[in-house]
Length: 498
Image 1: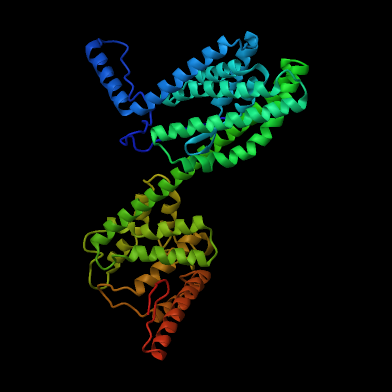
Image 2: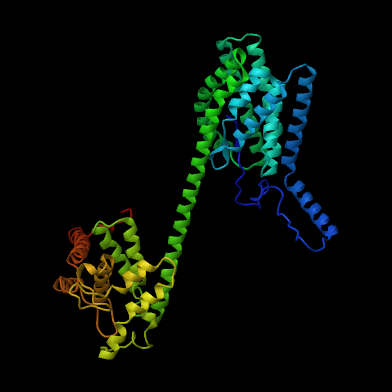
């Protein structure tokens, strides 16, 4: 179960981190026609190269040390007479191991794992240290991709791991071909492979200072504990099948495992795409809310008497929707509609909103145009078609005497009926240039009197239940303060120490 660190760097200015594009800095793409200033291009390349060396001095030293150690180890093994499998078997093992590495499944933000453990450990037990060393190095060489420094680290690292894994496995299995001896050799090879893999990963973390070791242990530790007992019997069967039957018998155990990893890899890609869509939707919702807030701020700046009215209507509307048992999506939608329900007033003639006295009939007709103006404004915004429809209908009445379309009853969208009640209540209880605010109880009585004619009965009952609960909480606090004059009354949601 080889694991590898995956570079996902968020701040390229910190020493020891790789650039998001890899380790080669920005790429230069030349035009198909034109002249190339080779002196400038070579000079800039040298500058980038020297900058990379200066920035990654520790990592490059680590790569040189690993590569030199692997070359010396492979030379010694060849000199000792360790053999290689037939060329076609060697190519097949290297190719399969490379494919397994490329289909790695991410188990943490910067850690990947794969089933390359199976062909790698099988090679170590069945063919010895030199074959395992070369198969591990060649497989990672074929897995050439960004970031290139990571690739340069894991080529010699896997070669060294294969060499030492094969040495210990060969000492255990000897010339015996029993299944028990194959199982024992596989257990030893698996533990050694995992140990060397962890050693090189931890060493890379220390050199690069890219993540705490504890994070690596937490990510890979549980996976290793579960995977080694699962993979070892499969590898032992592969070794036994190869020794007693043929190379193709061993391969039959490997194909289903690679297919399973491919399925997991595709599932992970689909999950990543789903998570990206969730993030994109959250950003879109935040952008919609910011846009609505900007429109409301524009309207509030024009009329100081209605400043905060849209935010209050949005809050009441969300609370009513929740009381009615609507979904979270509908609650969010009605909140957004409440914020922009009066945006059409931006298109009204100057002075109409600020007029201190009653409106004339002509002025009232102009005022009644603001739902339709708001709809025309909002339909110009992407994905605001449903919001525009709700805003257009928020002054319709249950009896069909509203405006602008004279809709009645269930013809009026439910969210529009909610906005109508929330709008009317906040308007009655707020200060206006032509009158003082009404007490809450008076406004609620007015709403109750208009049930069935102007307002939806269920919506008014939901708002009344919300406001009645709020009044009970206020009355309770007042009663406690009267009974306990020397006690400190802490409002709900606050914290204090007497």
